[in-house]
Structures are given as C-alpha cells and as structure tokens.
Amino acid sequence: MAETSGKAKDNPELRTFGAEVRRLREGAGLNQAELAVLVHVSRAYISHVERGRTRCRYDFAERLDIALRANGEIIRAWDDLLEAIKSIRYAAYFVDFPKAELTANLIRVYETHIVNGLFQTERYASAILKSPDDVTTRMTRQKQVMSDPLPKIFVVLEESVLHRQVGSADVMREQLEFLYELSHRDGVRLQVLPTVYVEEARAAFAIATQADRSEAAYVVTATGGITSADPADAANLHVRFASLQAEALNVRDSRALIRKVIEERWT
Image (cartoon, rainbow, N blue to C red; front, top):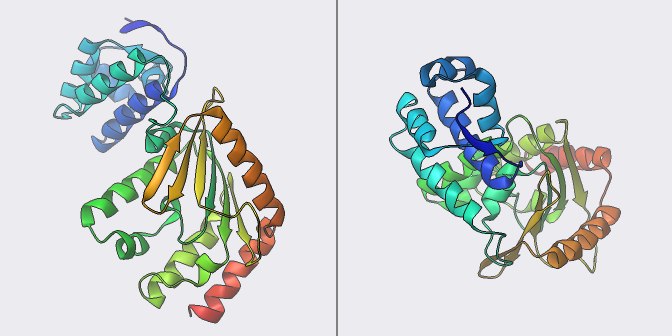
C-alpha cells in the first residue's frame, strides 16, 4: 500500500529527509527490502522515500522511527521537512548551505587558505577545529556528501594551501596524500591555482547546484561566512569560478604538483 500523501517533485528538502532515513537504515544494518517488511510497504516505496521522490505521511515517519529505533530522529527530520515545504522559497540570505550541499548533484569549491572541509582528513580537521564534537560533525558531513551517488565536484585550490602547515608534517603528508587519492575519483576534478595574481581570487566560496538547477552559495568572510540563494550571487560566482579554472593548472598537472609537494616538503 502506498503510504504517501501524493507524489512530489524532487527537491532538496525531500532528498535531505530521504538521506536521513537512509543513514539510519544503514546504521541499523538493514537493506531496503528488510525495512520494507518491518513497516509493511514495498521495497520500491522505501527507495522512493530515500531518493526524495515522494513525501510520506507523519504516521509512516513514526513507523520508520520505531522500526529503526531512531529515538525520534526521523520524527524530527519529518517536522523539519514539513516546515521547509511550508516555505514557498528560500529567503535570499537564509539558506542552510550544508543541507543544500548534501542534496546537490554538482558542487564547485574555491579554497584560499585551508583544505575544504569536504576533503579534510580527520587529523587535519582536528588541528583546525579543536572540539571533538565539531570534528565528528565534519567527518559525518563529509561521509554523507561523498557517498554514492557522488555529486560532480570541481575544486580550485590555491597552491599555498599545499605548503601551509596545519598540525604536524605527518598530518600534512596524510592530508595531501588524501587529496591526491581524491583527484583520481570519478566525478572529482581538482585543480591547483599557482601563486599568481588573479583578480577573481578574493575569498573562498562554494556553490551547490540541485537537480532542478536551483543553487545555494557560501562565501567565506573574516567573521565566518555568508549564505545566499540569490540567483544573481550564484551567477557572479560562476563567472569568478570560470576565471579561476582558466588560470589553474589542469587536473593532471595539479596531481603532479601535489605529489611533488608531498615528496619535497612533507616527507
């Protein structure tokens, strides 16, 4: 029996809820078919919920929470989903960028001073964040965003990041080895920007693009960062990112430079 209040368009809010259901299901050691038996629906319906293809009713969210022993986590996620659906659109400067990043199918990142959080090793993150809880949050975010299906990810990283010591030399070697490995992954395009003046190279930023082409952007500032879902801001950052890519080394040369820095500076 279909436990849905009607087929819904694929959107970031539904996909965020579905990702939470999938995380808790996998944490419980269940596959989709096993969960479907416990809550009396088809495996296909579980798949639709996890992929953000349908919005389930509150009573079904309760059944999921009980079956997965989630202690209310699915109920809270459902409540968050409902509040998001009530909003017609994101306010221009009130968008949750980590959620947009989690459901994006395309991510563009420009980094100026440190390795982006999505690509940090745990020890590198620990040297920056200090708080174990913050490190755990970052690692969880990384695992969720970088899991299958992996979004397309384009990265422009300033060369100085490869040389700037964060933690010990061993931490840096491990971090750059991780970047080198990431650069070989399907869907990841990592380019290094040489230490040259580029007008567009002013502040680190990231853009998360959804399947429906809606976008959210995050720009780093001296006191934290600014989030935006304003199309004009995204368009401006697209132009900047294209210019930065044009000035950066190609993927193969970037990979070779990372290997060179590992061997010459961090070994």
